Amino acid sequence: MRRLRPWAVCLGHAACDLVGAVEVWPGPDEKTRLRAPFDRQGGGPAATAAVTLARLGAPVRLLGVVGDDELGAWILAGLRAEGVDVAGIRTRRGRRSHLSVCIADRRTGGRNVLWHPGDAPDLRPDELPAEALAGAGVVLLDGRHPEAAEALATRARRRDIPALLDAGSPAATTVALARRVEVCIASQAFARALAGDDHPGAQLRALLALGPR
Image: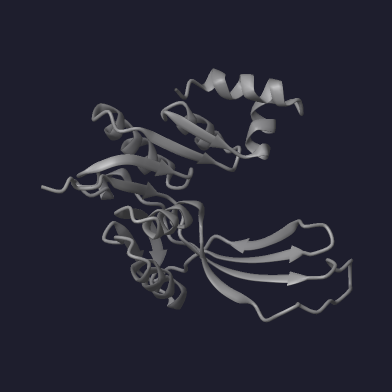
């Protein structure tokens, strides 16, 4: 009998990104032309990870929230089309979904992001499906919905399911969550803020002190 693949369970941010590029970022009171029309893409660390895993052939479920606006419907449709299980995503009535405008500067290779978080309340621990970890082999968190994320990480540890954190923002809730996971994948901004030091060695020591295994 063929062995079933373990599920990946992602909890966090699902958004709509408008992605474009310019030759040079404009200065104050200046205009510049986009190299091409905006490309509308799904965004959010947890949602992006879920889609990546689904494309690699893993069964994936995503937990989070969207608004009941056009963007929310578009986000859910895109995730379903990629094969992601979205039964654990709550649609908040009368609320708006997260929208980001991401513009790359071809001269520097950097990018600027303008974003609005929407107003959909965070996922609560009591909204986590009872079967959220059914068949799970790994949990991925991105720091959003911190109370629900902490509850899921605790549940995962009790079942010996490894949890990973994509730590982008140095928010206090993300630092606290980093203490509850097995693997912390930290951005430079997170590591620098945590260590209070620009030296990579100091940043690594600060990350290790959090306790991820």
